[in-house]
Length: 127
Image 1 (tube, rainbow, N blue to C red):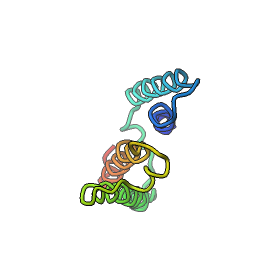
Image 2: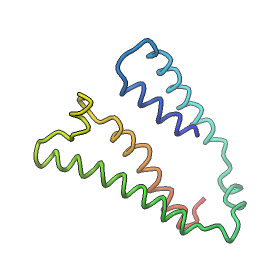
Image 3: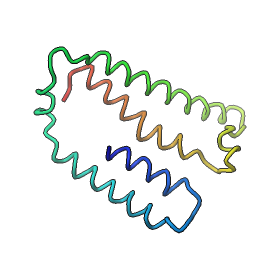
Image 4: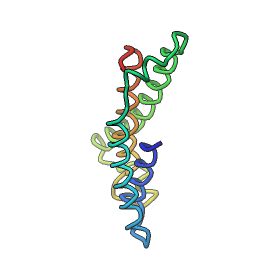
């Protein structure tokens, strides 16, 4: 939930037009970072991993995470590679009159990378 909150407020802080809520977005983004860091530092991963049952569908869950990471990453990476090869700005950026794709940046850094690593570790039964 904290990563989701961080993702959302990063979108509003960096992707939304400047407005009267800017300081609120900045504060909530910053608080989300600290809450996520402090929350993760206190997690006992070995204890959590021991609570999983033998019948937990680890392979299915990791396959789903891998599918999402590959599909989402593939979509954004293909748009970037298309831009590199053709010089044509992706339609989503043109549609919103933007100069960058904040959604792609956040997805690739905060969703795809975490899902890939999580899928691999889960498949290997790494706590």
